Length: 170
Image (cartoon, rainbow, N blue to C red):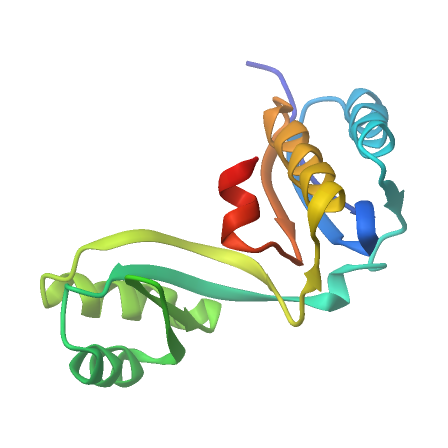
């Protein structure tokens, strides 16, 4: 009570030139800024000015649905009719993308047909990705993990592309 919370977004670059956006909610920007800066520096990255990396991302609604939930063509018809922009298969799941203003309509369409949603959020999705391999991939993952562990951090978005086998090895 009596505490004023502020949403603050920080941007930076991680190892290998990976762009990172960090969304925080804090009661003290003077504490949060040096903490985030320290995490970037500790893991081989650096903070950047506002909008230095934001242009590499776009805000989109994002859903994950298991591929067994519905036939692909039926699911595609359902989500497009509800306002989704795109759908693609990723392993045993479908990823569905929508404009933020159509997020609730797509969510309701999926729920209305009894489709179980594995994940859903309005997220900053990268327009393109940066490939990270070997030691660089491990350093990027360590940076992301350290940022996510900070109490003020709500979301971390990055534009890295790391091979599934490297993710499992970490």
